[in-house]
View 1 (cartoon, rainbow, N blue to C red):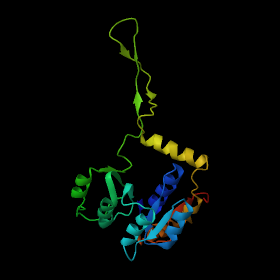
View 2 (view 1 turned 120 degrees about the horizontal axis):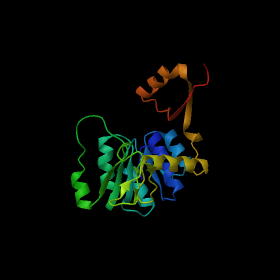
View 3 (view 1 turned 120 degrees about the vertical axis):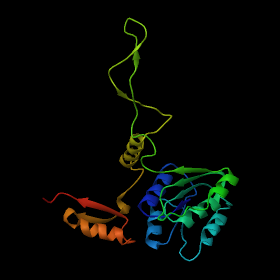
View 4 (view 1 turned 135 degrees about the vertical axis):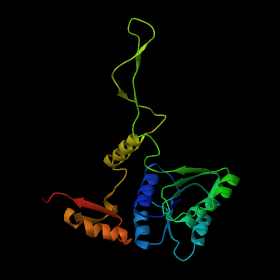
Length: 215
């Protein structure tokens, strides 16, 4: 389940489809963004503007009582609390947004009782890249570090650089199509207007591409 279908939520929906997850249930307040979610592979896209019970009904339609993995991408405190309510025992909640204000969401009890895991999704929450210097025996003991530093390749741990490389690979393989997410194109001279749209929370703006070609 992906709560919130802004740019981050929509990208999450596309990635969930690319790895074969299902059913993929999405929610938002905007019908246009929910239509985008369906085009990206969502099995169910629910408008929760009038009632949060719509998500409960969606679960029932798929014969589900709870969800094993929930992504929260709205930035709303109440939605984060609802995510814990919908989460299955031993489930995982991925927090992709940070809400405004200082009031902490009331999620500790629900996470504890379900034995669930809360995962932060901040971009700098893992190393950008890992490097290592190999030990070499140079005719005497103890071994000395080689002067060359090499990038560490590991299938056990992903760095931020690994994540970026994987995402770009999925695009190159046509597993993810970003075209539907590009709702606006801006000349660089119009960037102040673009940021005004962001500040005003213009729901029509999902993804913007900046054209730097004009001198």
